[in-house]
Each structure stands twice: as structure tokens, then as C-alpha cells.
Image (cartoon, rainbow, N blue to C red; front, side, top):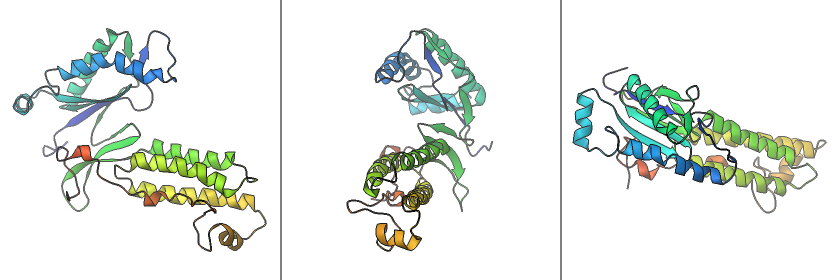
Length: 271
């Protein structure tokens, strides 16, 4: 740990829900997010009014840092939450025990084995994103990067693969492209607000390979030149009479505007 980079720890739940409601409810229903917001509102209030929470001013926060005390912020979406702590690992672990006590008043239990305490340099997965601090190549400055997590990439790859299996080769290519394009556009729209260019290019190559194998199964006796002439207009990118296979590499990436000037960015601000 370098003194030039202040220590930061995050308390998060990486894989599975760590909160369990003692009363039976259908966690897969549309009521799950609503119940989570109602039950976890006590956590929001506790953090908001905490001595190192977002309610304190900049002067008081700086004073706490000088005295070796922790400052923290809570980020929550339904029952997925992450507590960012400006302090030591001991501070993060103490806050974990404090939160467990607060949640117990609502009949909720914080699973200790599923709760991760990690340094920002080691990174964490949250809401499909991988959040980690890296050194910007060519400089000695460190920035926090957000990019699609490996688990999210595996999920969309499985989606593409399953669609190419579910849509039979007796159906036209347009049927497959319609379903693939819907899934790919939604995934890319969610992850375009991060460092996703390399991931989009990889997904482009994987999708092209998977659809090409589907075409080869559809026409097992045709040569690759015949398939290109019929489905790619002599090129290499599959298309039907109504639509073209969505290219993830063309989705582009953009800055998440809420980041603004509060979180340092490795890219220059334009406009």
C-alpha cells in the first residue's frame, strides 16, 4: 500500500444475496426488489446519519481522515449493495459487524461467508461490472476503471450459444438474427458506460463464429464461398433480407455522466 494512494476498502456481496428474509417470500417475483427496498431502508438511514457517512461536510470528513477515522458511502440497488470505505481493513470489518447488528433488527441476517471485504486495487464485481483501480499506461497516476465482469461476459456468451441451439436450422436466418440482435443490443447498451471496447470486440468475434457455425449446420454440403454469397453478400458479416447481425463493436462507449468531475477520469474532458 503506497502513501500516495489512500487506502480504500469495499464491503460487497459478489455472487449471491447475503440477506435472507425470515418470513417466506417469492424471491423470483416482481415483489423482491420492492421488499428489498422496504427492508433495507433502515440500512440507508443508518449509513446516511453515521458519523462518517455522506451527511458530514468536507471539513469534517478531512478532520476524520487526519485523526485516522473512516469515511464511507453506500451504493445500493435493491438487495445488491456496496459500502465504499475510505480507511483501513479494520474499519471495513468493524462496519460489517455494525451493519449486521442493524439488519438483525429487521429480521435480516448478513451472511459472513458471502460478504467480501476487498481493497479497491484488488477490485470487486458489482451489478455486472468489474471495478478496480489500475495505473494508467504510460503514467504514474492511478484511476478507478469499470469494465464488464467476466461473469457477465460468460452470461451473454451462453445466451448467444443457447439461442443458436434453440433456433433450429430449419428456420430462416432472419429468425435467429432477430433474437440475437435484441439480446446483444440490450447487453451492449448496459455496458457501454465503461471501458468496454475490448470486450465488445471479443463479443463481436464470438458471435460471428457462433452464427457461422449455425449456417454451416444449416447447409452442411455448401462451401464457405456459397454461404458467403447467400448470407453475407460476398462479405463476411451475416445478414438476411430484413436485418443484419448486430455488431457489438459498433455500440461504442461513452462516459457515465454522473461521474462528472467528482471521480477523477483518465480521459480528458471535452465539450
